[in-house]
Length: 449
Image (tube, rainbow, N blue to C red; front, side, top):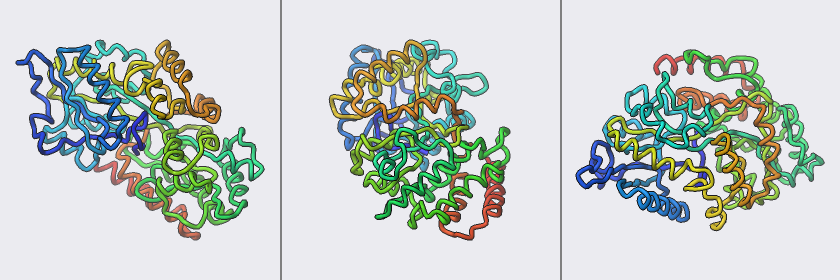
């Protein structure tokens, strides 16, 4: 699933307008006649995201000034990668020279033969060796490099410290197991006045997304290692659903309103009526700036369960029609825009702070070694959020396995949505039957892929 926002939280953007036509959208024209290498790129923030748009344009202008032989043509729209048009753009030759992808789409783009092989050129990307290997590996297929990671996220437990205190819980010792989550949720719900202890999504594929995260947290998986068979009808899968069932119907700690989606839950947390929910760190500024929350009250803990957490993120791939000159120019652009610690669109923390953008949220680290040290140093120097509220998340993540979303994620999430919604809306839901039926449907999806 995608995240929301732009700074380190790109929901992401870009579908070429019809006015731009094929020549402006696709590859194959590197403008060599003018002496410049021309590249089209996507994911420029829309005009409605004024500050981010301004930063992006500033950084593109600075890049072109430092590289007068390269002409960058950015495209904007919302979202960067629209599932409804993504494959059609690839197949129709309309994709930009340098284009945005979610981690989960990297293998698909390679499988349909629409990605340029970057292996001969990747040594020219100065930052490549500094990037986390597990993120680089997402864009490496059969030993060949087809893309460059740009950001990542991991799921954790957002909780309201003020409600913890009111409920007699220690705000500096958040729940580490699902039993502890259940116990804390019951105490928070007991505060009354419409307070909900724990909330979860169960519609628009978001319930399936969270079921996956919760299954990972218990050491389970959605799809087997061979990618051919579902693995949801397991003790771990039953434990996920039984816990949700018991919190909803036995403890009454999840409230009566269900079939919630992300906006519903964010509104509950921002209004101070929710104790806990699963999310990535990028939810925190949304809770403050859009939903009425307070940075001081919002804290983040690692995924309960102690086994694993779901990670996601994004990166850039290159059109298979891109020329060697365009690939080299695109790699230079990525270094400048996104992959220089303490600088560029995502790393200029001082500039972000000057515009009151949040600095210091606990994103997973993109870099390693000296590059990571510099990035963390600059971030810490410009932090404007209570970083101590996120220390449990940072510490706990060190002991968790990081797992990406399953193949055919959205189709699988649609199946699992029905399972989660049934458990949360029907007290007599048959968990064993739900998981058996879901397993068969997922097997069918995998067989067709």
